[in-house]
Image (cartoon, rainbow, N blue to C red; front, side, top):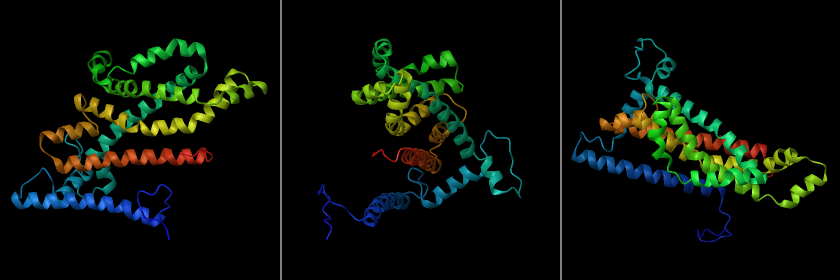
Length: 286
């Protein structure tokens, strides 16, 4: 019989049991929220701090099917659901934040390449490592006024904030991955007539790539954090902008669905990266 003790290191719990336990935690959280909402609404039927299920459904409908206030679109009576969603505020905000997020993600690629060179080529390490170590200690949010002055309050200031906030940490992380590659593998590659770039990109980079993807997964939340900071301070659209606007009106029926929507999107990106990593590198045990 399987050992059910949660403190047994060698325990091998049943897969179905693990999934049930995981679902139980979600159910407990939802139940606690519902109980709190019922209790508060019993004292004050107009309470908006902890929206009831009816209020949340109304908020979701408003976010998903009604156009944003700044949109001139007026849906016709016979407009399709897709047409309404396409002009909704959650669609507009998701597209705006998603564009900034993925541009920032793409701009992290040069940071990974630089880290590979810092960890492998002594001249790059001597020239860049101390600067990156120092730059990593600068609080990225303190640079936001400078970024607004340099790039204005449009897209690039927010994108620059995300890249500046995440890139130095990723560079240091990837540099350590490169240095952890056994020296024997590098020497062996040279004995097989490989040149410097063969060793860098065909031996070392391919070996650390699954770890780089995992590092990127761990940095998804910091990336969204810096993006939210930029959008809340100066933006006319975006997920964080909408949350900031709703906060002024105590619109928790909109804020909570937005928070859960952002969490779902990040979970989806993380899951996609995990699947890609598993498909590309079946030999890697994460």
